[in-house]
Image (cartoon, rainbow, N blue to C red; front, side, top):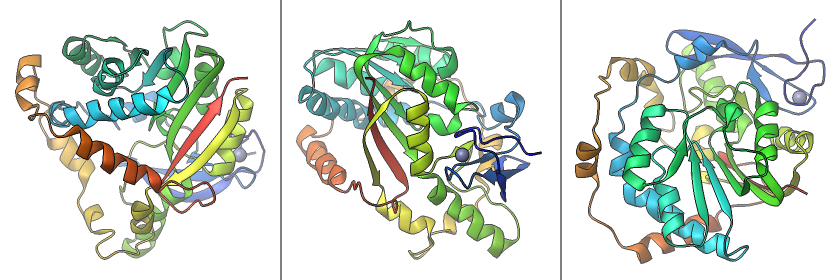
Length: 317
Ligand SMILES: [Zn+2]
């Protein structure tokens, strides 16, 4: 008998399609008719999951320094309309540059959690921040330490999302908020389904390393199970949503390249803090960034599941 759905615990999950988890690793994705979640079944082993993350070259994080820093500065403005100060946690924070932007422009105390020990060490030195290095499920931060937790493209990589969300709920103070950015699962799987039919084999698209594909319903279930109250759920990245459906010219062209093989072949050079600093570009205009950001955020809608990503806000009662 098939096991129960790892998200909603209903029986009756069924095979949906094969997909490429990582290089030379094709696995069966199953889905749950009750909550609409899809996931690799069985859940891949830690060894298989670790193959999704070849050694990384951190150059890009330095090159996008100001974009990340301004992201934090823009977040400071949005947070101020809710609370002027509090404790903020970014999970999967990389070098913590977004946190530095938030810290420098608000009264919030910021901390980070980063899976990669190397990224965490570089980030601590570059941005003078507290960044713990651990998986989300083993967070060293005590219960009720935070007023705001950001989970940006993290949950879909977690082998046990119910446990991960329970951990997040534990770290939040009563009245604290969770901001969750996660791919729109059914849309995330579309290119793989379409290209499997066209090319006769599963193809690595944008879903690489994703273990779970959450529907709107499955996110609602997950929040409820962890005792969090849903405040809003909006869908965004409409253009990527069109590309996922193959509606734009050349939508699937980039997937002809085997990016797993490229990543495996690339030399992950060691990058010192000094070398990284030289990659940071000159500071661009903050005003221009802010207006671009406001324009982008305008295109987030509650009543549709068309876009590629979900933005969820939830509160701990
Ligand atoms: Zn389910």
